[in-house]
Image (cartoon, rainbow, N blue to C red; front, top):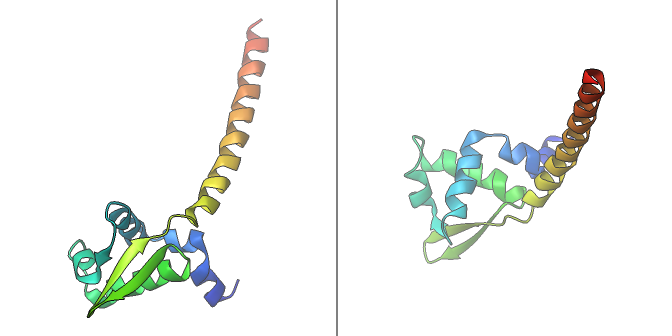
Amino acid sequence: MSERDQLRDVFAAIADPTRRRLIRLLAEAKETPLHELTAHFQMGRTAVSKHLTILREAGLVLDRKAGRETLFRLNAAPLREIQDWVAFYSQFWSANLLRLNQLLEEEEE
């Protein structure tokens, strides 16, 4: 996977704890300007802006200009890919644990 494709990958975008925290903050608000988001972190506006760029390239964040400010909001639709991936493995483990339980019950008999 090229570096550019990786920047657009939802899994890569949420791999960083700072970006996951940004997603949570944006999920709790309708639209938030950069300076308000930056106040939640011990890093500068430039660093927060770089994280937002990665989230935007993955389709997780939308932005719009409002005067001199840029407002950011969450676009949760790409998270469906992660939900689907987790759901697949949830079914996998449920089926395997059920089989294990059946085997253990058969051994007890």
